[in-house]
Length: 182
Image (cartoon, rainbow, N blue to C red):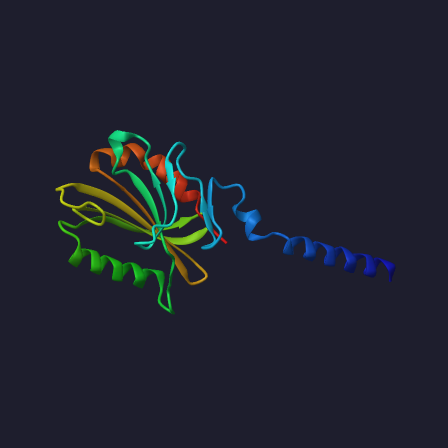
């Protein structure tokens, strides 16, 4: 009987200990965290971190510090709810929108993938004068990774000129793969 009580107390202490694993714990080891939206990641070393942009759906931006690479950036957009839809159908809607709305849009690839153990989908495309570039004929290569957890989807957007895209891709992938949602 004493053994059963002792095992019960140990199980209760273990459960209480597990409940102490908070959002703070899950995000504490990451180079950037946003507790309001419940995510974090390790941005590339030396890149400039910018917080929420109130005039857009941008939650955080990470800008390449090299003056010659001003168009190289990672952007995290506000999460969206799937509202009963699947990640695949959400990506299909996005692809349809981009093909109609972005000048000189050209889809390069699309693939299901995983990010830090979470269900994700990746698209890579080129466009000219897209998103944030105004009054300039600038071609941009973009990778967007849609990461889903608990019916919420975050979009991680990496963009660069085609010449710079491959140069930074491996360190950007490291950042994407560190992305955590709590």
